[in-house]
Length: 633
Image 1 (cartoon, rainbow, N blue to C red):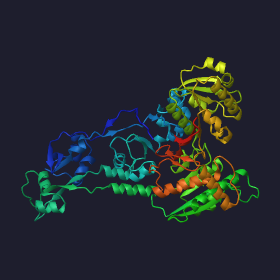
Image 2 (cartoon, one colour):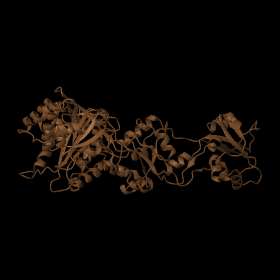
Image 3 (cartoon, one colour):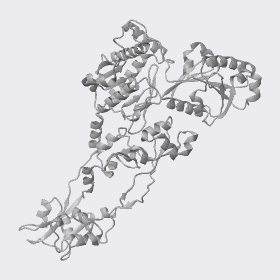
Image 4 (cartoon, rainbow, N blue to C red):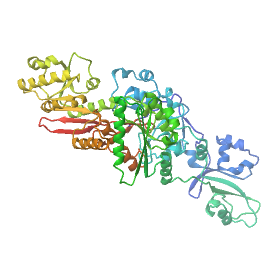
């Protein structure tokens, strides 16, 4: 995902106290230090005022002065620490620039940033003309969650997970927990992440200097060598810090550079933290749960409940594929009929907590409660049925299987603009109903566009008078009804016969795939049909799946689209195989996948959100009677 971030601050950026000191510089070992010699009767307060730093800064690098200053004592300050220009932002970010991704909606962006649509519209007057991919919109962050517990940050070129955590005084663990979409391997410039509040322990760690200077009282027998050995430093560095002292005298003080213990973070340490946060492990057993309103106690369950049962049986058949494999698949079902997820979850808490995958169906409340339960217990929760659910904005392990309409229309738009760039797109309007939602999206494309009525298309004389033959044509019906399809068949047949000079293709709707008798027409019209689901190209596999279902369960599956037994089989196979391969780590990039009737390509909506399926099938019935199926997104 690509985001950009620009911060506009109301208050000026001020410089921290670490400004250059007006002191001479001395090399100690291979490090430069400002130095100053304490004079008689000087105080810590007076020296701090003279140098323009705090007393704490002096003590930080010279901890011995905490017990009092000594005449002729050397004070040291690392040049690098005081030459840094550390920016301290005294105000919150006022505006974020968000780059619109294909398929995103205004509502979706408002959910990602937890801001109202009204506030978005107020900050972006141009949104009244619609939302376009790759456009930039302003997010007034002070009104969203990003200014409360978390704040947005754009990863800069060359930055690592460790560096960002250290610079912002948060632990790597906290950073990973706040951004489940990032990992040590996918951490790249340009991504927006959320930074948690600074942690006291991390602030103290970052403020600890690498080296401090202590005043050591020389005792009988002390030498430069013995003191160096005692404090794990070198004789040279002690002599550098005590110029003019050729020999140590009992009762005098020698100033010793002492290296502070630092946390050594290796790449393996970071990887181990990541694995712990995400509970990544090689699984020998996968526990699957289905929480559906099965109506198991109803002697005459509804058709919807029977479809859920077919889905469950498809999952069972998928699990059966692994019987002779090295992995164990356990399956539990929970009936939500006459109850809600919360009450069922309470009575089956231990069984549910141990799930790796949970399929959920039911009311909006059931899905929300299941999502909250799954988030608490780090369970992958799969919404296979609802199109407009929105829990994936808040739950990093929520998977929206049915491609949301906005992503589907965006995929079709991209296909049209890339494949038909030089065509004239002609919309065919009917009088029966309003235009399909896709039409609004297509009218925003850059193609040459024209709208005519179905009556004008049916009359070839009128059509040839109002439509120039300077380009190939892509016909798009504004309605998908059987009435419109029948009229199109008649009109395009006449056009081909009476005006053969016109070359054209037809863009069709998913429901048209339910009319196999129309296939000859689709070929003659060079038709492209988009759909979330199709058996085309996998007819033999679909036939075998249905035969297996009938063999094991003694009856045929119910007819539906998607066909539920195969839908359950496809999804179970996908999630079992994926979790098995990635150790339950969905930040490992997974390739798009095609099942018997389902295409899947999951994408996170943000680095702190869940997943949506962005894949759609495109079926091309070409005029040479071949059929080509591809995945678009």
